[in-house]
View 1 (cartoon, one colour):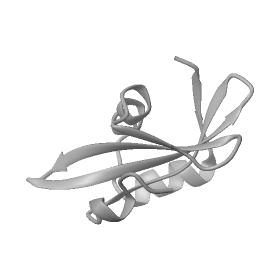
View 2 (view 1 turned 90 degrees about the horizontal axis):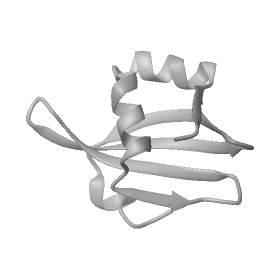
View 3 (view 1 turned 30 degrees about the horizontal axis):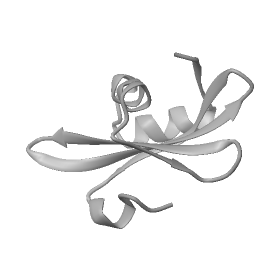
View 4 (view 1 turned 90 degrees about the vertical axis):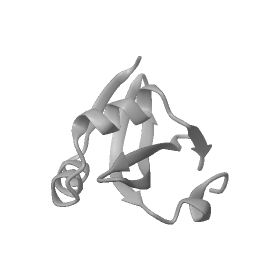
Length: 86
């Protein structure tokens, strides 16, 4: 796997949203879906179960050379809104 780097914004949002780094690494390592946004940006999506509720974890990545730069991360319960769409 390529090197993963977290922007300060991503670190802040992960802390604010209580999203563990391990979840992000798992989503990027073994995504359920990858959406191509543009030439360098992709969204890695992974279903997660938290406290008995299903969420879609969305990890926004910029590919810069051989590095995956995590721009931001969030989870949503609006799964159908984001599955298979950019």
